[in-house]
Length: 229
Image 1: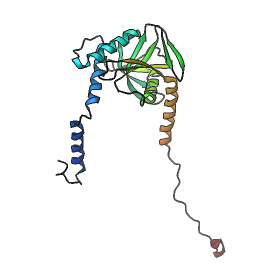
Image 2 (image 1 turned 90 degrees about the vertical axis):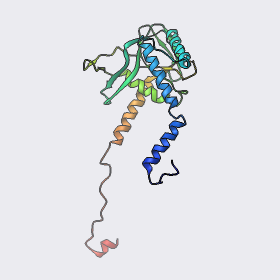
Image 3 (image 1 turned 180 degrees about the vertical axis):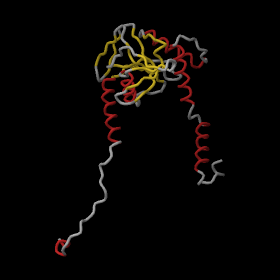
Image 4 (image 1 turned 90 degrees about the horizontal axis):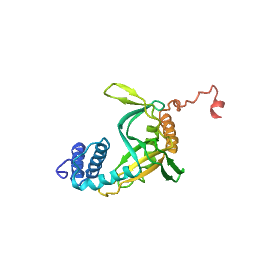
C-alpha cells in the first residue's frame, strides 16, 4: 500500500503507518493494561468479574497485596473527579483508600513513613512493566489529588467533600501485566507538591507576553556631523 501511494499523500501514508503499527501489536500492551486496570476497579467495587485465565494470576496477586497491607476500598471513592481551584485543574483519581493496619514504608527522600489505621491515602493503579521513568510525574499527579478541595457528583450535579487525606505520602498499586506480582509502592507527594508549584510557574511563564518591543528605529540626526558620529 505504501509503495503504491504518492509521497505527497501524507494523510494516507499516516493511515498506512498506523495500520502497520497496530498489526505489529503496538497497542496490545496498552489494551491489556487497560483491561487489568478495569478488573481491579470491579474487584474494589465488590464485584466478581469473569477474568480470563491468563490474567487471573495478576488479579489474584492484586487481591493478596490489598489484603496483606490492610487497604480498605470504598466504592464511593473510586474513579472520582476532583478539582484543585488553586491551579485551575481537575482530574480523576483511581482510589482514595483507608488504611486498617499500621504499615511502615521506606521512601529514600523521606525515610520511614508510617501509615496508621484510619488514615486516608490517595492511591493509583499502574500496569506498566517499569515505573522508574514515571515516578516523578505520578508524584505530582497524586500530590494534586491529595490537595483537591472537592469531588464532583455527576448524578446529583453537585460537589462533595473529601475525607481528610494524607498529604505527605501516596500509594501506587503496581500490577505489571502478565507477571502475577503486584507490589505496593509509597511515593513522596510532599516533594510532588513542590514540583506542582514549579509546573504552575512554568505555565505562567509560557503565557507571559509583552517582553519584546517593536523593531528599533534610528532617530534621524539634524547635522552631518551627528550622523557621522
